[in-house]
Image 1 (cartoon, rainbow, N blue to C red):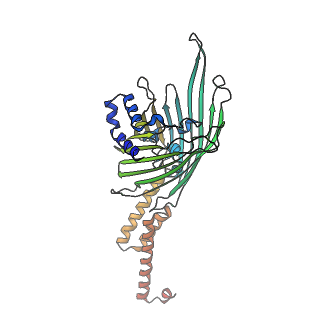
Image 2 (cartoon, rainbow, N blue to C red):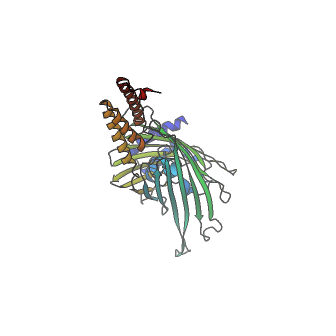
Image 3 (cartoon, rainbow, N blue to C red):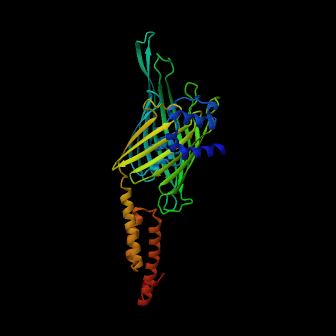
Length: 416
Protein backbone atom coordinates (compact mmCIF):
# COMPACT_ATOMS: atom_id res chain seq x y z
CA UNK A 1 0.00 0.00 0.00
CA UNK A 2 2.82 2.44 0.78
CA UNK A 3 4.37 1.68 -2.61
CA UNK A 4 1.12 2.52 -4.33
CA UNK A 5 0.73 5.79 -2.46
CA UNK A 6 4.23 6.88 -3.50
CA UNK A 7 3.62 5.97 -7.13
CA UNK A 8 0.29 7.85 -7.14
CA UNK A 9 1.97 11.00 -5.81
CA UNK A 10 4.69 10.80 -8.46
CA UNK A 11 2.12 10.36 -11.21
CA UNK A 12 0.24 13.51 -10.18
CA UNK A 13 3.45 15.52 -10.24
CA UNK A 14 4.71 14.31 -13.60
CA UNK A 15 1.42 13.76 -15.44
CA UNK A 16 1.20 17.17 -17.18
CA UNK A 17 4.72 16.93 -18.63
CA UNK A 18 4.30 13.26 -19.48
CA UNK A 19 1.29 14.04 -21.63
CA UNK A 20 3.51 16.03 -23.98
CA UNK A 21 6.52 13.67 -23.89
CA UNK A 22 4.97 10.28 -24.68
CA UNK A 23 2.09 8.84 -26.65
CA UNK A 24 -1.16 8.17 -24.80
CA UNK A 25 -0.90 4.35 -24.99
CA UNK A 26 2.67 4.49 -23.66
CA UNK A 27 1.56 6.52 -20.64
CA UNK A 28 -1.45 4.39 -19.75
CA UNK A 29 0.25 1.03 -20.25
CA UNK A 30 3.33 2.27 -18.38
CA UNK A 31 1.17 3.14 -15.38
CA UNK A 32 -0.67 -0.17 -15.63
CA UNK A 33 2.60 -2.14 -15.66
CA UNK A 34 4.07 -0.14 -12.77
CA UNK A 35 1.01 -0.74 -10.61
CA UNK A 36 0.33 -4.28 -11.86
CA UNK A 37 -3.34 -3.45 -12.47
CA UNK A 38 -3.88 -5.73 -15.46
CA UNK A 39 -4.35 -8.71 -13.14
CA UNK A 40 -6.89 -7.10 -10.78
CA UNK A 41 -9.70 -9.49 -9.90
CA UNK A 42 -13.45 -9.23 -9.25
CA UNK A 43 -14.21 -6.29 -11.55
CA UNK A 44 -17.45 -5.97 -13.49
CA UNK A 45 -19.53 -8.07 -11.09
CA UNK A 46 -21.97 -5.33 -10.08
CA UNK A 47 -25.04 -3.83 -11.73
CA UNK A 48 -25.75 -0.22 -12.82
CA UNK A 49 -22.25 1.01 -13.77
CA UNK A 50 -23.74 4.50 -14.15
CA UNK A 51 -23.67 4.74 -10.36
CA UNK A 52 -19.85 4.88 -10.35
CA UNK A 53 -19.32 7.02 -13.46
CA UNK A 54 -18.58 10.61 -12.32
CA UNK A 55 -20.93 13.30 -13.59
CA UNK A 56 -18.08 15.70 -14.34
CA UNK A 57 -17.03 18.99 -12.78
CA UNK A 58 -14.47 19.20 -9.99
CA UNK A 59 -15.37 15.72 -8.75
CA UNK A 60 -14.14 14.13 -11.96
CA UNK A 61 -11.27 16.61 -12.41
CA UNK A 62 -9.74 15.69 -9.04
CA UNK A 63 -9.75 12.00 -9.89
CA UNK A 64 -12.89 11.47 -7.73
CA UNK A 65 -10.84 12.34 -4.60
CA UNK A 66 -13.76 14.52 -3.51
CA UNK A 67 -15.40 12.97 -0.45
CA UNK A 68 -13.88 15.60 1.86
CA UNK A 69 -13.98 18.44 -0.71
CA UNK A 70 -17.56 18.35 -2.10
CA UNK A 71 -17.93 22.05 -2.83
CA UNK A 72 -19.75 22.16 -6.16
CA UNK A 73 -22.89 20.45 -7.49
CA UNK A 74 -20.99 17.22 -8.19
CA UNK A 75 -21.08 16.57 -4.44
CA UNK A 76 -24.19 14.63 -5.47
CA UNK A 77 -21.91 11.76 -6.51
CA UNK A 78 -19.30 12.28 -3.79
CA UNK A 79 -20.82 13.05 -0.37
CA UNK A 80 -24.53 13.59 0.43
CA UNK A 81 -23.61 15.57 3.58
CA UNK A 82 -22.25 18.49 1.54
CA UNK A 83 -25.51 20.17 0.45
CA UNK A 84 -25.78 21.83 3.88
CA UNK A 85 -22.40 23.53 3.29
CA UNK A 86 -22.74 24.86 -0.27
CA UNK A 87 -22.28 28.62 -0.50
CA UNK A 88 -24.61 29.12 -3.45
CA UNK A 89 -27.84 27.83 -4.88
CA UNK A 90 -26.84 26.15 -8.14
CA UNK A 91 -28.43 24.69 -11.25
CA UNK A 92 -25.85 22.58 -13.09
CA UNK A 93 -25.95 20.74 -16.41
CA UNK A 94 -23.25 18.25 -17.45
CA UNK A 95 -22.36 16.26 -20.56
CA UNK A 96 -19.80 13.45 -20.58
CA UNK A 97 -18.41 11.78 -23.72
CA UNK A 98 -17.38 8.27 -22.77
CA UNK A 99 -16.34 5.29 -24.93
CA UNK A 100 -17.10 5.60 -28.68
CA UNK A 101 -20.73 6.80 -29.02
CA UNK A 102 -21.55 6.35 -25.33
CA UNK A 103 -22.60 9.56 -23.59
CA UNK A 104 -24.03 10.61 -20.25
CA UNK A 105 -26.13 13.67 -19.43
CA UNK A 106 -26.55 14.93 -15.85
CA UNK A 107 -28.40 17.67 -14.00
CA UNK A 108 -28.27 18.82 -10.35
CA UNK A 109 -30.16 21.53 -8.50
CA UNK A 110 -28.95 22.35 -4.96
CA UNK A 111 -30.15 24.90 -2.41
CA UNK A 112 -29.45 25.64 1.26
CA UNK A 113 -31.51 27.22 4.02
CA UNK A 114 -29.22 27.94 6.96
CA UNK A 115 -27.92 24.56 8.14
CA UNK A 116 -30.37 22.58 5.98
CA UNK A 117 -29.36 21.50 2.48
CA UNK A 118 -31.50 20.04 -0.27
CA UNK A 119 -30.75 18.82 -3.79
CA UNK A 120 -32.21 16.81 -6.65
CA UNK A 121 -30.20 15.25 -9.44
CA UNK A 122 -30.25 12.73 -12.26
CA UNK A 123 -27.91 10.96 -14.70
CA UNK A 124 -28.86 9.46 -18.07
CA UNK A 125 -26.47 7.10 -19.86
CA UNK A 126 -27.21 6.04 -23.43
CA UNK A 127 -25.39 3.60 -25.71
CA UNK A 128 -26.53 3.22 -29.36
CA UNK A 129 -26.56 -0.20 -31.01
CA UNK A 130 -26.99 -0.71 -34.75
CA UNK A 131 -27.76 -4.10 -36.31
CA UNK A 132 -26.48 -4.96 -39.79
CA UNK A 133 -27.21 -7.97 -41.96
CA UNK A 134 -24.64 -10.18 -43.63
CA UNK A 135 -24.15 -7.79 -46.55
CA UNK A 136 -23.85 -4.66 -44.36
CA UNK A 137 -27.37 -3.26 -44.69
CA UNK A 138 -28.71 -1.62 -41.51
CA UNK A 139 -31.58 -3.63 -40.10
CA UNK A 140 -32.26 -2.03 -36.74
CA UNK A 141 -31.09 0.73 -34.39
CA UNK A 142 -31.75 0.69 -30.64
CA UNK A 143 -30.31 2.19 -27.47
CA UNK A 144 -29.23 0.72 -24.17
CA UNK A 145 -29.99 3.27 -21.44
CA UNK A 146 -29.52 3.69 -17.70
CA UNK A 147 -31.23 6.40 -15.68
CA UNK A 148 -30.44 7.29 -12.08
CA UNK A 149 -32.38 9.96 -10.16
CA UNK A 150 -32.14 10.99 -6.53
CA UNK A 151 -33.24 13.36 -3.79
CA UNK A 152 -30.72 14.65 -1.25
CA UNK A 153 -31.11 16.22 2.19
CA UNK A 154 -28.46 17.07 4.79
CA UNK A 155 -28.07 19.05 8.00
CA UNK A 156 -25.07 20.71 9.63
CA UNK A 157 -25.02 19.89 13.36
CA UNK A 158 -23.19 21.86 16.10
CA UNK A 159 -22.38 24.74 13.75
CA UNK A 160 -20.89 27.78 15.54
CA UNK A 161 -18.36 30.58 15.06
CA UNK A 162 -15.49 28.47 16.39
CA UNK A 163 -16.58 25.08 15.02
CA UNK A 164 -17.83 24.51 11.49
CA UNK A 165 -20.07 21.66 12.62
CA UNK A 166 -20.58 18.07 11.53
CA UNK A 167 -22.80 17.60 8.50
CA UNK A 168 -24.81 14.43 7.97
CA UNK A 169 -26.85 13.67 4.89
CA UNK A 170 -28.46 11.07 2.70
CA UNK A 171 -29.39 10.70 -0.94
CA UNK A 172 -32.21 8.33 -1.88
CA UNK A 173 -31.88 7.09 -5.46
CA UNK A 174 -33.75 5.01 -7.99
CA UNK A 175 -32.20 3.48 -11.11
CA UNK A 176 -33.69 1.98 -14.24
CA UNK A 177 -31.91 -0.05 -16.92
CA UNK A 178 -33.55 -0.41 -20.33
CA UNK A 179 -32.22 -3.20 -22.53
CA UNK A 180 -34.27 -3.63 -25.72
CA UNK A 181 -35.62 -7.14 -26.23
CA UNK A 182 -33.80 -7.42 -29.58
CA UNK A 183 -30.51 -7.23 -27.62
CA UNK A 184 -31.36 -9.34 -24.55
CA UNK A 185 -34.97 -10.01 -23.55
CA UNK A 186 -35.89 -9.87 -19.87
CA UNK A 187 -32.83 -7.88 -18.80
CA UNK A 188 -34.40 -4.46 -18.17
CA UNK A 189 -34.41 -3.77 -14.45
CA UNK A 190 -35.26 -1.30 -11.68
CA UNK A 191 -33.38 -0.76 -8.42
CA UNK A 192 -33.32 1.46 -5.35
CA UNK A 193 -30.33 2.52 -3.30
CA UNK A 194 -29.12 5.18 -0.86
CA UNK A 195 -25.97 7.11 -0.03
CA UNK A 196 -25.17 8.20 3.54
CA UNK A 197 -22.39 10.65 4.36
CA UNK A 198 -20.64 12.64 7.09
CA UNK A 199 -18.46 15.72 6.57
CA UNK A 200 -16.61 18.08 8.88
CA UNK A 201 -14.11 20.91 8.40
CA UNK A 202 -11.66 22.53 10.80
CA UNK A 203 -8.29 24.29 10.90
CA UNK A 204 -5.13 22.20 11.12
CA UNK A 205 -1.55 23.27 10.36
CA UNK A 206 -2.87 26.52 8.94
CA UNK A 207 -0.26 29.18 8.30
CA UNK A 208 -2.28 31.82 6.43
CA UNK A 209 -5.19 34.13 7.40
CA UNK A 210 -8.57 33.00 6.11
CA UNK A 211 -12.03 32.36 7.49
CA UNK A 212 -12.37 29.15 5.50
CA UNK A 213 -11.27 25.96 7.23
CA UNK A 214 -8.26 24.32 5.64
CA UNK A 215 -8.75 20.66 6.61
CA UNK A 216 -11.72 18.38 5.87
CA UNK A 217 -12.65 14.80 6.65
CA UNK A 218 -15.48 12.91 5.01
CA UNK A 219 -16.91 9.39 5.08
CA UNK A 220 -19.56 8.06 2.72
CA UNK A 221 -21.40 4.79 2.29
CA UNK A 222 -22.49 4.69 -1.34
CA UNK A 223 -25.16 2.68 -3.15
CA UNK A 224 -26.61 0.80 -0.22
CA UNK A 225 -29.43 -1.38 -1.47
CA UNK A 226 -30.68 -4.84 -2.45
CA UNK A 227 -29.39 -6.69 -5.54
CA UNK A 228 -31.07 -6.28 -8.91
CA UNK A 229 -31.81 -9.45 -10.89
CA UNK A 230 -29.47 -11.26 -8.47
CA UNK A 231 -26.63 -8.84 -9.27
CA UNK A 232 -25.23 -6.73 -6.39
CA UNK A 233 -25.01 -2.96 -6.48
CA UNK A 234 -21.57 -1.25 -6.53
CA UNK A 235 -21.68 -0.59 -2.79
CA UNK A 236 -18.62 0.91 -1.11
CA UNK A 237 -17.34 2.76 1.93
CA UNK A 238 -15.26 5.81 1.00
CA UNK A 239 -13.02 7.76 3.37
CA UNK A 240 -11.45 11.03 2.30
CA UNK A 241 -9.33 13.91 3.57
CA UNK A 242 -8.58 17.30 2.05
CA UNK A 243 -5.92 19.80 3.10
CA UNK A 244 -5.12 23.33 1.92
CA UNK A 245 -1.47 24.01 2.87
CA UNK A 246 -1.70 27.34 1.04
CA UNK A 247 -4.77 29.47 0.43
CA UNK A 248 -5.04 28.75 -3.35
CA UNK A 249 -3.92 25.09 -3.17
CA UNK A 250 -6.02 22.08 -2.15
CA UNK A 251 -4.93 18.44 -2.11
CA UNK A 252 -7.24 15.50 -1.45
CA UNK A 253 -7.04 11.73 -1.01
CA UNK A 254 -9.78 9.08 -1.05
CA UNK A 255 -9.73 5.38 -0.22
CA UNK A 256 -12.65 3.29 -1.49
CA UNK A 257 -13.43 -0.09 0.06
CA UNK A 258 -16.00 -2.04 -2.01
CA UNK A 259 -18.44 -4.25 -0.12
CA UNK A 260 -21.11 -6.67 -1.33
CA UNK A 261 -24.52 -6.77 0.34
CA UNK A 262 -27.05 -9.62 0.06
CA UNK A 263 -24.82 -11.59 -2.31
CA UNK A 264 -21.98 -14.12 -2.33
CA UNK A 265 -20.16 -12.30 -5.13
CA UNK A 266 -16.64 -11.22 -4.14
CA UNK A 267 -16.02 -7.46 -3.79
CA UNK A 268 -13.56 -5.53 -5.90
CA UNK A 269 -10.19 -4.62 -4.47
CA UNK A 270 -9.63 -1.39 -2.58
CA UNK A 271 -9.15 1.61 -4.88
CA UNK A 272 -7.39 4.93 -4.38
CA UNK A 273 -7.73 8.48 -5.67
CA UNK A 274 -5.69 11.65 -5.30
CA UNK A 275 -6.47 15.15 -6.50
CA UNK A 276 -5.01 18.64 -6.67
CA UNK A 277 -6.86 21.94 -7.19
CA UNK A 278 -5.26 25.38 -7.63
CA UNK A 279 -7.18 28.66 -7.64
CA UNK A 280 -5.09 30.52 -10.22
CA UNK A 281 -7.17 33.74 -10.31
CA UNK A 282 -10.51 34.88 -8.95
CA UNK A 283 -12.23 33.55 -12.07
CA UNK A 284 -10.09 30.54 -13.06
CA UNK A 285 -9.15 27.32 -11.25
CA UNK A 286 -7.26 24.25 -12.48
CA UNK A 287 -7.46 20.67 -11.23
CA UNK A 288 -5.79 17.33 -11.82
CA UNK A 289 -6.27 13.92 -10.32
CA UNK A 290 -5.34 10.24 -10.44
CA UNK A 291 -7.58 7.26 -9.77
CA UNK A 292 -6.47 3.65 -9.37
CA UNK A 293 -9.54 1.42 -9.60
CA UNK A 294 -9.55 -2.07 -11.06
CA UNK A 295 -7.39 -2.50 -14.14
CA UNK A 296 -7.91 0.98 -15.56
CA UNK A 297 -5.65 3.68 -14.02
CA UNK A 298 -6.96 7.14 -14.85
CA UNK A 299 -5.45 10.62 -15.03
CA UNK A 300 -7.72 13.66 -15.33
CA UNK A 301 -7.02 17.31 -16.13
CA UNK A 302 -9.66 20.01 -15.70
CA UNK A 303 -10.34 23.70 -15.40
CA UNK A 304 -13.15 26.02 -14.37
CA UNK A 305 -13.91 29.57 -15.53
CA UNK A 306 -16.45 31.81 -13.78
CA UNK A 307 -18.11 34.64 -15.69
CA UNK A 308 -20.47 36.61 -13.43
CA UNK A 309 -23.30 34.19 -12.52
CA UNK A 310 -22.14 31.49 -14.93
CA UNK A 311 -19.49 28.83 -14.42
CA UNK A 312 -17.98 26.57 -17.08
CA UNK A 313 -15.92 23.46 -16.35
CA UNK A 314 -14.15 21.14 -18.80
CA UNK A 315 -12.26 17.90 -18.11
CA UNK A 316 -10.13 15.50 -20.10
CA UNK A 317 -9.54 11.96 -18.86
CA UNK A 318 -6.68 9.74 -19.92
CA UNK A 319 -7.22 6.01 -19.37
CA UNK A 320 -7.28 2.76 -21.31
CA UNK A 321 -10.49 3.77 -23.12
CA UNK A 322 -9.13 7.09 -24.42
CA UNK A 323 -8.76 7.36 -28.18
CA UNK A 324 -6.79 10.10 -29.93
CA UNK A 325 -8.70 9.89 -33.24
CA UNK A 326 -12.02 11.08 -31.81
CA UNK A 327 -13.36 13.44 -29.17
CA UNK A 328 -14.03 11.18 -26.21
CA UNK A 329 -13.27 11.12 -22.50
CA UNK A 330 -14.19 14.81 -22.40
CA UNK A 331 -16.78 16.26 -20.07
CA UNK A 332 -18.24 19.76 -19.89
CA UNK A 333 -20.31 21.41 -17.20
CA UNK A 334 -22.29 24.65 -17.09
CA UNK A 335 -23.57 25.97 -13.76
CA UNK A 336 -25.88 28.88 -13.01
CA UNK A 337 -25.29 30.76 -9.76
CA UNK A 338 -28.72 31.55 -8.30
CA UNK A 339 -27.39 33.45 -5.28
CA UNK A 340 -26.96 32.61 -1.62
CA UNK A 341 -30.47 33.52 -0.38
CA UNK A 342 -29.08 36.69 1.23
CA UNK A 343 -26.63 34.99 3.59
CA UNK A 344 -23.66 37.16 2.54
CA UNK A 345 -25.64 40.39 2.95
CA UNK A 346 -26.77 39.36 6.43
CA UNK A 347 -23.22 38.48 7.42
CA UNK A 348 -21.95 41.84 6.19
CA UNK A 349 -24.55 43.59 8.37
CA UNK A 350 -23.54 41.45 11.34
CA UNK A 351 -19.89 42.41 10.92
CA UNK A 352 -20.72 46.09 10.48
CA UNK A 353 -22.74 46.14 13.69
CA UNK A 354 -19.95 44.26 15.45
CA UNK A 355 -17.22 46.66 14.31
CA UNK A 356 -19.37 49.64 15.29
CA UNK A 357 -19.93 48.10 18.71
CA UNK A 358 -16.15 47.74 19.17
CA UNK A 359 -15.68 51.41 18.27
CA UNK A 360 -18.36 52.38 20.80
CA UNK A 361 -16.77 50.14 23.43
CA UNK A 362 -13.36 51.74 22.89
CA UNK A 363 -14.99 55.16 23.38
CA UNK A 364 -16.58 54.03 26.66
CA UNK A 365 -20.10 54.26 25.24
CA UNK A 366 -21.44 51.10 26.79
CA UNK A 367 -25.12 51.72 26.04
CA UNK A 368 -24.36 52.12 22.35
CA UNK A 369 -22.14 49.04 22.51
CA UNK A 370 -24.97 46.94 23.95
CA UNK A 371 -27.40 48.22 21.31
CA UNK A 372 -25.10 47.54 18.37
CA UNK A 373 -23.87 44.15 19.61
CA UNK A 374 -27.48 43.11 20.29
CA UNK A 375 -28.39 43.84 16.68
CA UNK A 376 -25.50 41.69 15.49
CA UNK A 377 -26.54 38.81 17.76
CA UNK A 378 -30.16 39.06 16.62
CA UNK A 379 -29.07 38.62 13.01
CA UNK A 380 -26.63 35.81 13.81
CA UNK A 381 -26.89 34.27 17.30
CA UNK A 382 -23.83 32.11 16.53
CA UNK A 383 -21.52 35.06 15.96
CA UNK A 384 -19.56 34.51 19.17
CA UNK A 385 -17.43 37.72 19.07
CA UNK A 386 -20.57 39.88 19.10
CA UNK A 387 -22.10 37.79 21.89
CA UNK A 388 -18.95 38.15 24.01
CA UNK A 389 -18.80 41.91 23.37
CA UNK A 390 -22.46 42.21 24.34
CA UNK A 391 -21.95 40.35 27.62
CA UNK A 392 -18.84 42.35 28.51
CA UNK A 393 -20.48 45.68 27.68
CA UNK A 394 -23.60 44.73 29.63
CA UNK A 395 -21.56 43.91 32.74
CA UNK A 396 -19.63 47.19 32.51
CA UNK A 397 -22.86 49.12 31.91
CA UNK A 398 -24.43 47.53 35.01
CA UNK A 399 -21.28 48.36 37.02
CA UNK A 400 -21.30 51.92 35.76
CA UNK A 401 -24.98 52.33 36.72
CA UNK A 402 -24.30 50.99 40.23
CA UNK A 403 -21.35 53.36 40.67
CA UNK A 404 -23.54 56.24 39.55
CA UNK A 405 -26.21 55.13 42.02
CA UNK A 406 -23.66 55.06 44.85
CA UNK A 407 -22.43 58.51 43.91
CA UNK A 408 -25.99 59.89 43.81
CA UNK A 409 -27.19 57.93 46.83
CA UNK A 410 -30.00 56.22 44.98
CA UNK A 411 -31.05 53.67 47.62
CA UNK A 412 -33.91 52.24 45.49
CA UNK A 413 -31.45 51.28 42.75
CA UNK A 414 -28.96 49.78 45.24
CA UNK A 415 -31.59 47.69 47.05
CA UNK A 416 -31.46 43.99 46.15
